[in-house]
Length: 311
Ligand code: SAM
Image 1: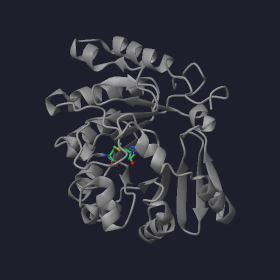
Image 2: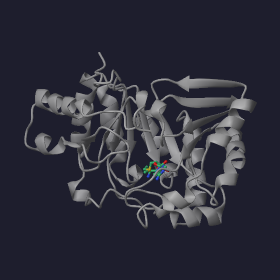
Image 3: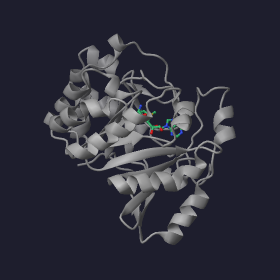
Image 4: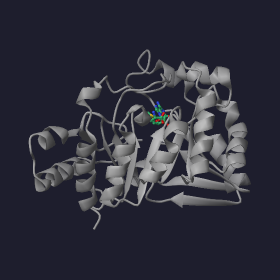
């Protein structure tokens, strides 16, 4: 049975950030401090935490970071999670090492992958990430498709005056290669340069894009337990809209719990002030029942960030 929080939201998905190290430096990224690799959770610790999550009814595991493929034990991590019996294991990656790992990850039990790619323009890519890895990312995406990871989704964060005009070009690229496009609204980021000046300056209102999609789509699906996201079908293509800011529907239908790279349960994407440590007790020998209690403490702290009183 799936555990629900105090707002009747089932906890279906668990997103584990397994490192905060990264090999690119995106303009908008919230770096959660620099945890040395020696202090990162080991594959066995990640597997134990996943196992406890499964006993509470979690169905989906997503691995993220930092850049998860920067970890040399990434295949071992996926293998251990797979052996627990999860049927839906995914990774969010910047794609730079995907060509190298896609096949081994697939063999280890990875089901699907999201690749962050905000632009197909080399100069814009360099401007956003401060690196020149666009070609490797494209190769990684094609390799992921080739080895049968499905679906492969492209995460595209839209930014005013940076890539706002590239949606349709990206959509064509996705259709050509059988990818799903996710358009993500730029969020405020605590540690962005100049205390959110960036997100204020570059925040782009994606409502007009969604309105256009609603008009031209052949079909629409609402992902009820995935933050009520809308998915638009156009010909053989799919575009999903991820709009967390000021969105009560996003919060009302959020079924995702998170884990920080430093081993703390994080109840809400948009908050860092209500974390619950689980790695400390695990390293001090906590029993499975005690770890389950820690999960429940974290789950009980969940509340919709945006609700009808605070929008
Ligand atoms: N390194 C991996 C990657 O690049 O996909 C995983 C970590 S990254 C933080 C996960 C996702 O968060 C990416 O798709 C990224 O675009 C998105 N993201 C990061 N900061 C964001 C922000 N301020 N607003 C919207 N999305 C953001």
